[in-house]
Length: 301
Image 1 (cartoon, one colour):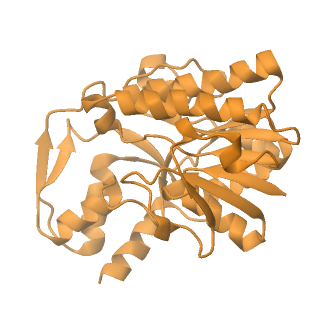
Image 2: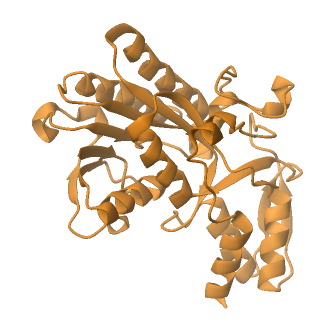
């Protein structure tokens, strides 16, 4: 088995690279090395090509792959609100280029596209408790809209050209090698430094959280056996306020709250229906967010 992995210098992609490394599977990484991508995230000796996926050619990578696993994406919602153009370039044009390369690979078994629960939009607007794989897509930011667009490109390539694919839509990830500016590391750092924590709106937005290694373990299993669209969620849902309070409690420190104007287009709640995933027999949650926070705090002390 040989796998091409895009965006593996980032947080979730690097988890997948380490999994492949542990299993002794041959793989090649393509990464542009943006602010969120670091070479030190990869296993030592990894075959890495530093290049923008929009400019990638078959001469760069060759054609002999069993799977393409496409993690590469612009993913910071606040950045997409400030300037959506990099999101259109990478998430739409970049995915299109990867699909076109995939179509020229004679032995490719599957194009695996890593998506997000954000493509469904705010669950509260849909008048449902959870979103399943048949729910409509509603882009609330340029990030979620471009990810939804890339999902549709993959589906179109299957419909028109017969490209075999798997799309996984997952919730918020936590774990090793997460960028220091993301939510959880930022909260821990600011509380430790006795700094106020900026909270969008009333802080009661609900998000679902999954350990990155659990996510990538399930992606690896699904990749080999399933096609179509599958939600990967945990059912472990927290409000932002609850996360902040829990971290403060574990640190044994008072919290300085700073409620700020809500993010534009901010979705109130994400919640994935995991029925389809559980039917595969692959659903497995080995670490909850609370378990992870306790580990992080113990390391801080």
